[in-house]
Amino acid sequence: VQLQASGGGLVQAGGSLRLSCVASGRTFSSAVIGWFRQAPGKGREGVSTISDSDGSTYYAESVKGRFTISRNRAENTVYLQMNSLRPEDTADYYCAAFPGHYHGGSIIARPSLQTLALSWGKGTLVTVSS
Image (cartoon, rainbow, N blue to C red):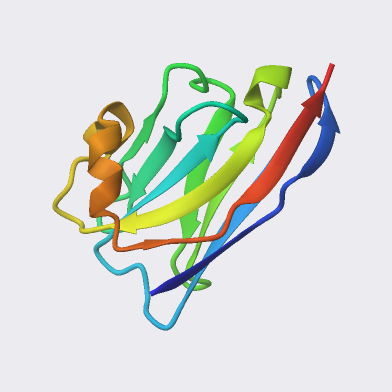
């Protein structure tokens, strides 16, 4: 499956953006889809995941209450709605697909699990100005 992330841009602190992750070549069927981000000079961290099979969602503590992940199965797209953006949210954002038997919360909590992704999309840059 090929993934394409889009929707990044420049926004002021307190603003909103919606990122999209579109799958082609194969559907998300039964996969766990995750959003990750990497700020300059830092490692890649898990932001949020959603299970295609049951819709269960998980979030990093740093984005809980501000970000919302959702999916549109008909359009084979996963979204990340980002509200109340902060300068520390500035990063390249990536989406990735994982086998469905992995726990979405574990994917966020354990960076080592990122190596088990089936596919990664190219990043989309989010810049939040203060």
